Image 1 (cartoon, rainbow, N blue to C red):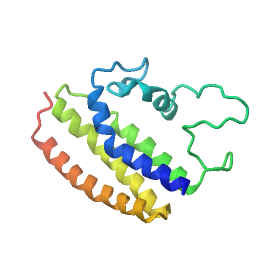
Image 2: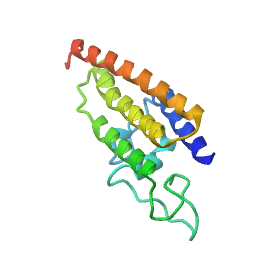
Image 3: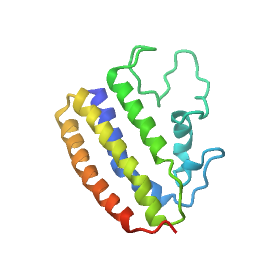
Image 4: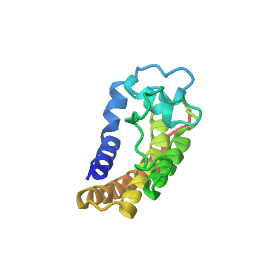
Length: 163
């Protein structure tokens, strides 16, 4: 049950994350982390931990659990689902590191394609490893909707100038 709640929360967070990015578009990037520009400041520490070369997690009391660590319950042993989520997340962040053109429309479309593909990849992990019917149904909808939007975004890129 707990895993279902975490996956649902993660998928819903992906679906609703756009509003947060738009609302905080004037936020300054964290030092050394240019891709965090526009990210709400409260997410910077978590994002640093997820990025290669990011800051190490803060020291914790012995035995304390990191609230951002969603790996398998057995220390040092990640589940197949966790490994697949981590791989999808790393691929998505790598592919979102586009070369910005200065054309906001083009840059949005170019960055959203790998973002949507990341959501599709994570939804496929749920279909492969999840068991909650509601989460699986949501994952199927994510795949359907994000694939449709990727087609739209690619079509837009063909007509948007690079400046």
